[in-house]
Image (cartoon, rainbow, N blue to C red; front, side):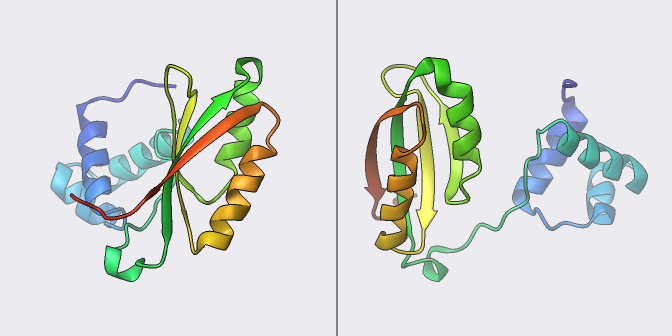
Length: 142
């Protein structure tokens, strides 16, 4: 994996702001050629720095969604396998490794409580997951 430079960081900032920005618009903002910007985006994807493009919905359009943070205790010898399995679950919007008792903190969103219940069941069935503690996210403050 290559190291990202200041140009890559500027490109990533623009994409975080608008993941649908055209290569032409990005190139103009960065004062680079379209070919250079396209090549940098492809390299960032290939290196796994850009994993996906997504949509950030306003709360009013997702008011019935169930948002949660789950802390997972793992069998450390199986951590890589657990990480792979969790990353295949589309309900997760973020997965983070952490220290302490909880080896992984996972943010999820599901359409309703029934789907959330199914997700918890699937997490618990992953070989190497020892314990899960989950908090539902209620009102967003900021």
